[in-house]
Amino acid sequence: MNKIIFLYTDHGLSTTLLPGAVCFHFAADLFDVQTELKKEMARPSSLSAELKSFVQKGLVIPAASLAKLLDDRLSRSAPKTVVLFNFPLTAEQMDSLLPVLDKQQYTNRQLLVFQLEDPQDFKAKYFKETEAASYFDKFGDDVYSTWELGFEKRRGQINEIVYRWGSAAS
Image (cartoon, rainbow, N blue to C red; front, side, top):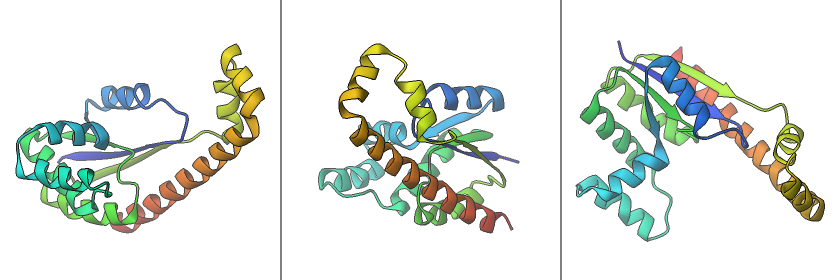
């Protein structure tokens, strides 16, 4: 049985160390959509051409195309365990991925969410350095409001995926 792990992290948590540690712990391959898009668009393929057409027009890549990317990656390497890092981020992406996971026989599905308590935690960790602290003193209110909005948006995305994931698991 193949296993898929949905890994979500809050804004401000490491996007390299945390996924690497999770992959090491589970002896899993990492599927980071940004990295995989770059790799695929460097290859000569019909999928690459499709992805490039959206990027060149400045459009968001549709969920169905991202699902094709995952399907192609799983078909080529057939890993037993895969970590999907911060993907899918929308209900539409989740809905388009589920048939791919069924087709590829990734029936063992796990959800991991790493969250900070709140934006104050991130602020406290990030601005320990003198240079960063002086930046925050100068632009603090604007930076903090942007972070709060980012945290809220991220939590909303994660909550929607948790809901969808729970519905798909039952």
